[in-house]
Amino acid sequence: MSEARKMNADRFGVPAESMIFARNVRKTFGALEVLKGVDLDVPKGSVACIIGPSGSGKSTFLRCMNHLEKLTGGIILVDGDFVGYDLVGDKLYELRENQLCRRRAEIGMLFQSFNLFSHMTVMENLIQAPVQVRGTHVEQAKEEAAALLARVGLSDKEAAYPRQLSGGQQQRVAIARALAMKPKVLLFDEPTSALDPELVGEVLGAMRDLAESGMTMVVVTHEIAFAREIGDQLVFMDQGQIVERGNPREMINDPQSPRTREFLSRVL
Image (cartoon, rainbow, N blue to C red; front, side, top):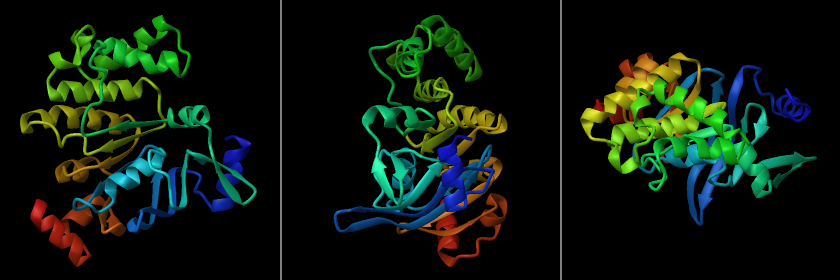
């Protein structure tokens, strides 16, 4: 652990096994308070699933984790380090863009839309960031990309363009592209919500394999069965706050909060 990360861990009381450590996270857009003091701990190698109604702040919280949204208050540490800031004394200073890109490279993010470059082949999509951001040699990047495509079951699609793929295939390519940067954590923002129902299973299968391999994951999802099977913790958010958290199987079978019970009764 670097000296800065050790100092952060000691200062804020971050557990040794923590990958994501969030305390009193607040986010406002004008007069609208979207996050109202959210705390979360995600240990290394674990899967946290976040559920809740639309507008509850789930996606905003996820975007704060890699500084796509700037915090209004509170802190988020990923592997003991700030993502968009450096702490100097008692003040946080926002990083310059090149520094931010290096920190953000350690946090992969998958969205509802696949965000693949339509003018590039699958292989070109996968190697661009490792070559441009990490300075990986092109041939090495291609070799690693081929292995990742095999991992998500798409070895035969290296030369295909995104428009030639199904939605499920595009999302699996997006997963492989995120993995190409060798991230410490993967964030998923409802990765199956834009897919036809028959394609959901192939994406969840790829995510299941990642979880079993020990990848740290935070998944905003409506797939309650997936959360029950794969999640190590389940978090229910409503109106910008965490209402309940716990073991997914226990929480789904016997929610303690009336609001959680009401939500689950509508989606199960």
